[in-house]
Length: 201
Image (cartoon, rainbow, N blue to C red):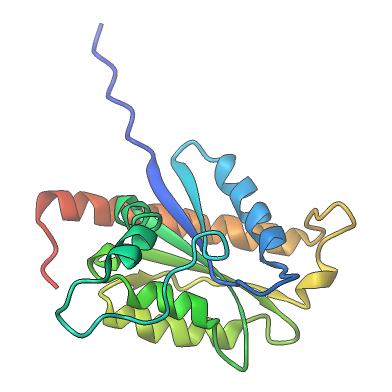
C-alpha cells in the first residue's frame, strides 16, 4: 500500500486589527473574519489587536536600536508577524485613510512583511473603508508585500450585523470566502518560494 502524502502544514494567518478607538466596531468585524478562518483546515489564525498590544509612537533614530522598554513592547507583536505566512488587515477609514495605530505597527517592522500576501477587510459608512485600503496598498508595496486584489469592504457596516453581532449579508460572507481563498493560494505559493530561495529585498 502506498504511503499517503504528508498533510501540508497549515498556513499561519495573522489578523492585524488597526483600530484602537474606544467604543470601536473592530472586534465585531474581527470575530466575523476569524470565524471564517476557523472553518478552514488550511489556515490557522492569530489575532494581533493593536489595542491590546500597543506599540510606542516614537521610532529610534535611523540605524539605532530601540530602547529596552520598546524592545519589550515589540516582543509582543514582532515574532507573531514574523511567524505569519499571510496577513489580514482589518481597518476602518479615518479622514479618507487608515488609523495611525496601523501605520505605526507597519513602520516598526520591515522584513516581517517581505514576500507575504495581505488581504484587506475594511469597514465604514458609504465608502466602506475603500480609501483606507487604497492607501495601504501603496505602503505595503514599498515593504515588498503582495496585496490581494479582492477587498472585503463593509459599507454602512453597523447595519450588516444583527443584535447578536452575526453577519446578515450573504454577499459579504461570499466576499470574505473569495478573499481568503486567494490569500491561501498566494500564501502557499510564496511560502514555497521563500523556502526554496530566500527573498532579497
